[in-house]
Image: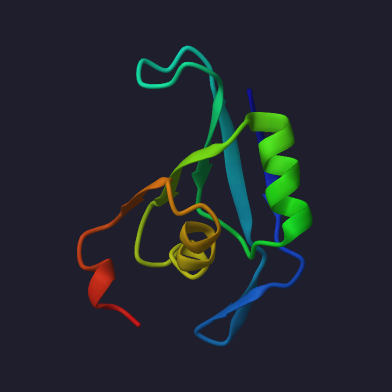
Length: 97
């Protein structure tokens, strides 16, 4: 199962507002997990309500993915909220501020 969530405010990119959206995938029968878990793609700003919704619909957050150097803005918020999650990011992202 998968679903998406949209950010409440657009992000400015080179002076242009862009709406933001993340995808949540509920992994079932994952070989390293004994129960369903959540995989987050391109995270948006996290709130307690959003974190609860993700865990309710998809299970505990085990994976967070920033697919490129643009979609990293809210990665730290999610990794701080879910410190046991494995974070995937594009090469060189750790050097960006």
